[in-house]
Amino acid sequence: MTMSQQCVLVAKKVNGILGCIKKSVASRSREVILPLYSALVRPHLEDCVQFWAGKDREVLERVQQRAIKMSRGLEHLSYEERLRNLGPFSLEKRRLRGTSDQHLKILKAWVSRGWGPVVPSARTRRIRHKLEHRKFHLNMRRSCFTLRVAEHWSRLAREVVESLSLETFKTCLDTFLCNLL
Image 1 (cartoon, helix red, strand yellow):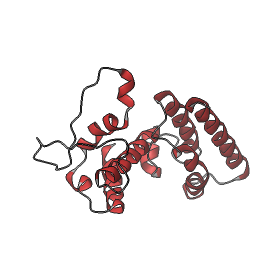
Image 2: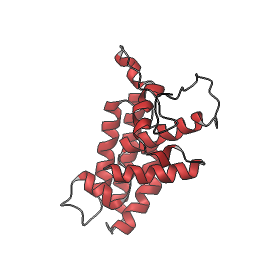
Image 3: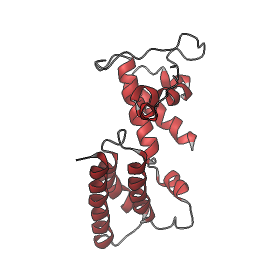
């Protein structure tokens, strides 16, 4: 099964779940919809979000838009403003968060580095773990993990990058991503 086929199956499953929520739940208030979304919908959307291609993420982002629209009282707002008010990140931010988490684990040697070392840049003064963003000639190489994460990693604030534990890193990263949009 290809990733696109898997993504279509996930979108179909989540749309079914949203249909069940819409039919069975009378209240559309934020206090009811958000916990249901977090428990039933979001785990399906976030599964392997780091590996899905752009067109697949667009399909899943539309499903998330449908889920966010179910909440009453925010009809006049745009999708980004609804996300900001309700709390969940867009799938693109979730992808960035997941790749940053994985990169921190690799950089701090919390997981094995079987696929090759990540080399920090020695030319920077600001952040000790800032990475060089290497150029590539093939479009296929653009989605390689080490190249995809380097640009975003180098833009992170110092307190995020130099976190001592994974939990503090996640907390600082969430704060940084909230302020990003």
